[in-house]
Length: 100
Image (cartoon, rainbow, N blue to C red):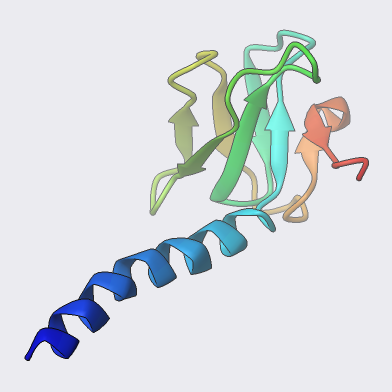
């Protein structure tokens, strides 16, 4: 029976690793230019606040079925716009692509 307990303790760590790997592929957006609304083409993404090195902690946001969400760190209002691609933003400067 002790083997079953050990196996179940490893499962959450494995799921966390899978979730972490999935999050690395989410689009990233920022609002360094300070616009009132950033329109984006996806409902799951990361907000980084501003361009590095002035960025805040990269936070995963999920709108679910809603059309809007506010970042709890920088108070940027993000609005889902289905006419944009998943990695696109309006204004375009608010889309962030990793340089690594």
